[in-house]
Amino acid sequence: MLKVLFNIFAPDCPAWARELGLAREHREIAKRHRRVQAAWAPHLQASREAVMGAAARCARHGQALVIGAGDCLDVPVAELAAKFERVILADIVIGVAARRWARKFPQRVSCAPWDASGALAAVAAKKHTLGAAEALAIFRQADAGLPPGGEADLVVSANCISQLGLVPGHALPAAERDPDLPDRCAKAAARRHLEWLGRRTGIRLLLADAERLDIAADGRVLKRESLSSRVGLMKPYRQWRWNLAPIPEWSPDFHRVHEVGAWLYDGRNEENGSPVVA
Image 1: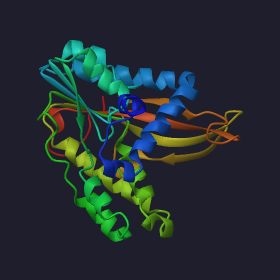
Image 2: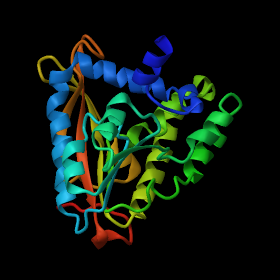
Image 3: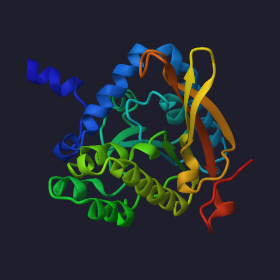
Image 4: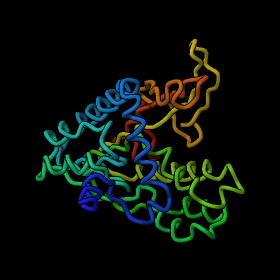
């Protein structure tokens, strides 16, 4: 009975993904959401609205692909299923909620275990002997390949680009000797993901952290760090705040807040993969 319950409620992912801490990260996100649902609600709603705004730009409604679907907190699955013939929820860790949506709309919604970085299996295979230079080379040269299900009319990268290399980078023993390695892995993976998005043929929506702020209880900004500029993104066409970790979730002294941006790509900017800013 316990094994059956575990299979029902545990996230579905390859063993090597657990080695890299991705299943644990999935569980921690779910736990934090349960603790601070009210603080996250505006961000999740804004993300869902941005997804449906991008969907409205699609000339065809055959297939929608959501990358980093997770537990679909920020994904309007039912609305996408009503608009597209097929919706693919892709992530390296497939959560219970995603599987539930696939059961609810069996003809329209499916789950696809998929590594958007294209690097993780190789990183995991060499995890214990991988040096910093070799780890970065893997992320910089990796190719995620064709999207699961083939090219889609809508591709959504859903609040995952900053994590593609960060969590696996922290799992590397080399990071104990080189504390900046996870951030460099994150930057390399994010740039490759942007290149991959630039090669897609449909409407593409990137939801990503633009800035990270530490805000005191009285509203003073204690620290501000640009995240999007590190990977060469221009100003997003929409932006909102995500109260990621309100006091005392991250710290008793400040709220950890992300400025989240929405970048939209379409056929008008195929040459350089730059997002639409309008």
